[in-house]
Every structure is written in C-alpha cells, then in structure tokens.
Amino acid sequence: MAVKDYKKSIFEQFARTGKAFSNAHRIELLEILAQGERTVEQLSQAAGLTVANTSQHLQLLRNAGLVTARKVGQYVHYNLSDDLVVDLLVALRKLSERHLAEVERLVNTYLTVKDDLEPIHIHELMERAGDGVVTVLDVRPEAEYDAGHIKGALGIPMDQLEERIDELKPEQEVVAYCRGPYCMLAYDAVVKLREKGFEARRLEEGFPEWRKAGMPVELKQE
Amino acid sequence: MAVKDYKKSIFEQFARTGKAFSNAHRIELLEILAQGERTVEQLSQAAGLTVANTSQHLQLLRNAGLVTARKVGQYVHYNLSDDLVVDLLVALRKLSERHLAEVERLVNTYLTVKDDLEPIHIHELMERAGDGVVTVLDVRPEAEYDAGHIKGALGIPMDQLEERIDELKPEQEVVAYCRGPYCMLAYDAVVKLREKGFEARRLEEGFPEWRKAGMPVELKQE
DNA sequence: TCAATAATCACATAATCTATTGAATGAGTC
DNA sequence: GACTCATTCAATAGATTATGTGATTATTGA
Image 1 (cartoon, helix red, strand yellow):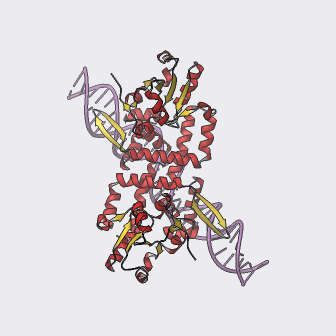
Image 2: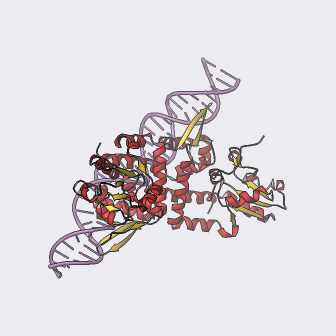
Image 3: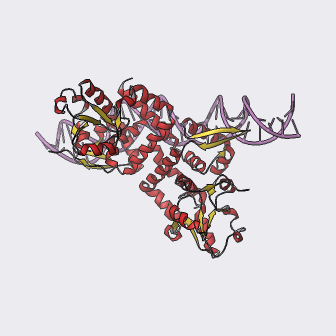
C-alpha cells in the first residue's frame, strides 16, 4: 500500500468517528448516555425522537465504536463504550463555546445573568460536602438518579421540586446539579429554590464530569 | 425561548463544529494547518485537492470558527484559530485509534513492526537534546520546517535525506520527527538512516504536540 | 491600463444523510 | 401457540453535502 493511500485511509477512519458528532440528535444521545446506561425507548423519549430513528442513530454510533449495546430480555441497553467519548464531547463543547458566538449568545440570553447564579466547582463541593453543611441536590429525572449520582446526594427531579421542597433543610445551603454545563435543570432549580427562600447554588459541572473526576458515586439505595 | 428549543439550538451548534470533522479531507487540512500557516494553494497541493475544492472546505472550517484567514497581497494565509482545535484533533485520533480496529490494522500493516522502531517521547527527547548527544532531525518539507520547528533541530526534508546525509554526525544518535503519530515521514527516515548505519529513532509525537506542550520552538534562522 | 495570478463564487451533478413508514425479528407472557 | 412489546430492518422521499467546471474578484507588476 502506498503512503498516500495509507494516509487517506487513516483520515477516513478519523472522519468516520467525526461523522458521529456531526448531527445534533446524535450528540444529544451521547450526552444522555454520558449519564449512564439507557434503553432505546428511554433515549428516544429523552431526545424527542421516534424509536426507529433513535435506533438508527444508535446503529451508526455503534459502528463508529462509540457506544455498546447489550440485550437484557427484550430490552437493549446502550452505553458509552469508553471515557474517551466523554473527553471528545467535552473537547467539542469547549471548542464550540469558544468559537461559535452563537453558543455564547444562547447561554447568556437564556440563563438570565449567568454569573448571578454563582456556580460552585467540583473540588469546592467535594470539600464542603464532607462537612455535611450543604445539601447536594440531584434534579435530573429519577431514572438518571437511579443509574448513578453523587454520593450522598438527594434526588428530586426538577418537575417534583415544588411539591417535595419540604424534604430540604431550610437552614442548609443547597447545591443543585444535573447533566453538565449545558443542562438547564440545575439553573431552573436554583431559581426555584431562591424563590422559596433557600440559599442555593449550582454545580458548574454535571454528574458525568463528577464521575469522570473519580469522585465518589453511588447507585440507587433501597 | 423554551428550554427545549434552547437545548436543541445548543446541540445544533455543537453539531456544526462536529460537522467540520466529518470529512477526511477537512481533517487532513486541519492536520496540515496544525504544522503552521499555509496558503490555499499549499494546502490544496498537500492534500491533493483542487484549489476550488480546498477553498470551499476552508470556508466551511472558517464558518465553524476553526481556522482564521488573513490576506497578504494576493495570498490568503490560513491558520488554526486556536490550540483547542489541536486538542480536538488529538481527542479524535485517540478515540478512533482505540475504537476502530481498522485504524490499528492499517498502522500495524503499513508500519512494518511498529515497536521495532522504538519511538522516543517528548520529555525523554527534551532531557537528552539538552546534552547535545543527539541530533534532532526534522524531515518535513522545507516550508513546514521554516514555519516552525523544534529548537536546534536540523531540517532535511525526507526527499533530500539521501543526498544530504553527510550533514549528520555519524557518531550521534538521530531522532527524527515529522507531523505527528500518523505521519509517515519519520518512519521512512528512520528506516533510511539505519540502512546507512546510523543509530536512529523516531519521536512518537510530532511537531504540533511538541509546540502544544510548550517546548522550545524556533523559526527559520537566517 | 492590461495581463497574470490567487482565491472565491456560482452552478450542476452525483453521492450521502435523515426521518418516516410499515414490516420483520425475537424475547417474554398468557 | 397466539399475543404483546422492544427493537431492528427495509424502502422511500426529501434535504444536505462534495466535487468539478467555469466565471468572477482582488491584487500585483509590467
């Protein structure tokens, strides 16, 4: 094989991986899978796609080697095949954030005044959570909480926050987190909690980053 | 704007960045640009594309914010806009390498026995280069050498290596490098040098990684 | 001002990608 | 064995992308 052909092949392989990240729905699926294992139906609901369409995107991701599938009964559970996939998602996010003015505009517009919500960072939370002086609140949907959450975190999905707000100790600061920097749930939770008179902040990173950093994680407790 | 729309927009922006990496030619263009600034014609030649086609790919890359262009006379010089682009290229390479069996197969097939060429790594080279006991050899084309190379490296393009081999000190070990892990030039150089009786090794990483690591770089000396 | 050159643009064509629909598969249940 | 459900497959139409050709623009130097 000539050097030229060889090079061509290599770049084609890279492009195959890149192609997986060239579609908004696939990126969303990957971001959801970064939270943990999901079935096709769960994915299709979370991403707002038809099941068949979701399945096809998943086939493509599987061919690119980014996700793995295992069949349990009649369900197929999908998962990211590797932490390198998260690395690439993070790199893509960073790059997009820096270069696409549009992203920044969206973030700033939607998130009211971003800085006003004073995000806290992983290591800072780690220090303070140990003392038990903060309540760590997971506002993701229940299934995601069950699939894995920050150790000791209380799980109240965003849509139940209002009715279950009395599960929180009013004297403690609350740190809310969700799926990552671009997940809206934690923002909404902080706004809601402050309305109710809580001292509340948001974890800048989300659960995937937390897990990736090797911080303590636990599964659903019975 | 509803949360749903917002999310959609964000993922679409990410996909726009991802799309830039979904084509083999564009990835090649980015890899070439990772070596340093290039004009459209240089790029088209290096990648084996027509000028018009190259230009169009460059427009797309520019819209995605990955490259910058500056006009000097009648030439337009392109450049990567950011080191984050290199980060993403590296992440893409790593992920592809791990997941696509095909890539590994190609690497192993073409590169004879890879390990037999005993690559040396950046920090190791850094230590040894200081002592002046190794000759660091840049085998990339002259233009790329001129645009920036490892400090103190001797520049002999691969296609001139045979005729200019007497510029190398026979008693010194030679470390050859080129554009990165997938660049063939350094492999070919090591093979050639060993034929000629030199003790020769290859730098596993290439110039982009060297520069990225903050190691000393110099431009063409007069 | 004119010719030469680098780069881009505009258009046409072929190839590829995406979403939808409905059928097929395969496991579990009654 | 018939039925239900999760998932995949297959076929299709519509949208997007890649590339070549030839025209156009911008800059330089004669």
